[in-house]
Length: 229
Ligand code: C5P
Image (cartoon, rainbow, N blue to C red; front, side, top):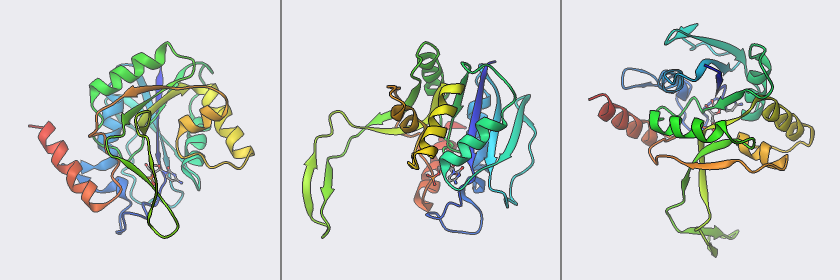
């Protein structure tokens, strides 16, 4: 195993509401983050996981291993990118050109086949690779009054999912550069793109959803219960 998995899990889940941060909601019998961790750690190429937690996190169940692999933790930061950078810097020493894989703690329904295709694509590609899904809906640009200003051609547009896989040194440098330029990157690929690289889009399943609202939680519960039958 040679790929470390990084799970940013230091968000407050403000859009979800509720007392428990969304990564700790019980879904299909275990916390959301456990589903995300298990999906990653069950791949034979994955060496272990580094979880970035909020400094005041009181809900982390304290796992130190799962699937016989190490689960390490560190303190995340104010933005997602800060949490990922903190996790990169807390990893055990390893080659700069080894792969790291970043996956939202809030995505419980990653399928093994998607992970396998992603890692396969990333292994021979110095620019890295991400799971993504083609946009299916017609896209409207809004004006300030909430009226349609334009219809955007969707043919070349994709939704960025996770995991996203990059060389460790490249991703660290790209995130440091974005921070130095005070640019807020909303995924890892955006930082790498700013460095002039062109990560590969690997088409993933539509049901790799990020739990953001209570309706997403219900949908995730349904999807995971279907898989366990
Ligand atoms: O809020 P959103 O759903 O975009 O968060 C995506 C992931 O990034 C979540 O797993 C969340 O916990 C994580 N995150 C983080 N540190 C932050 C903000 C978000 O680790 N400061």
